[in-house]
Length: 339
Image (cartoon, rainbow, N blue to C red; front, side, top):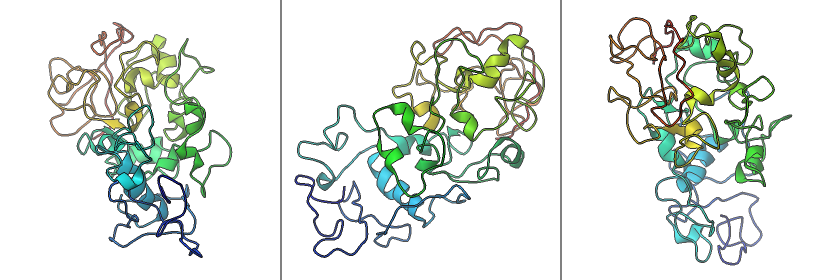
């Protein structure tokens, strides 16, 4: 992405032609020219850096990691891919710029979807989480309101010291799992237990795997008892049963790209909205009514169009591809999170 796409040789202005200037000049995949910052000025830099000490409060932040994410990474991982021929190898196309077998995914679209309270992580749109949730259910530095994430918050070393001055963990490796903090990503196969659990989500979303109550505890959208004890392991160790397109990476009905379950989405796996016509939020996969006073299902405490009262997920019997959520003994619960 810095030199001649055919020979790989340095070429002006990328990577410093001639004597070089000691700066890295990344090519915009859509324009074929040097990327710009959020002020519109040409942007070059001496070394990549990111931080886990703090996070920006707006996506258009003129810091190295935010500029590269939005004006380099997500310029290729969007609807039109690498739109400039200068950003492709010989024979490459906009959606297969390196001659790769699979097309680039519209990750920018996933992060942009779902409206102000939708199912997406705050990367190109500011988070709308409530202060109580952020302060009590998130790890630092995400435990204050309206933080914006970058790719390297998740695509980083599996364990140990996090990479802050290199991007190799975001670029790729021999195993998809080694690209994610925690190592086991999102889905697991086999029996759900404390030793066969999801280790990715709980890095940032704290307290769920260690909770002892049959709910998600205060400051979440599920704040009181209601589930039967048979759900305890799923509540603690299997986020994907409720917050993914299916409970099993091998057998569940899935989205076209499973990573959409983590990046963000605006529709259920079958392409529909929820039964009330609204897009799904909080990454909940079921299509049950959530604003119907006579047919309570899962819902948040408050929000546009949300009725008052209790909620339940009793009888979610496989509308979206599985029969894993049909425990008739699930009682009502008190919602606690506003969206």
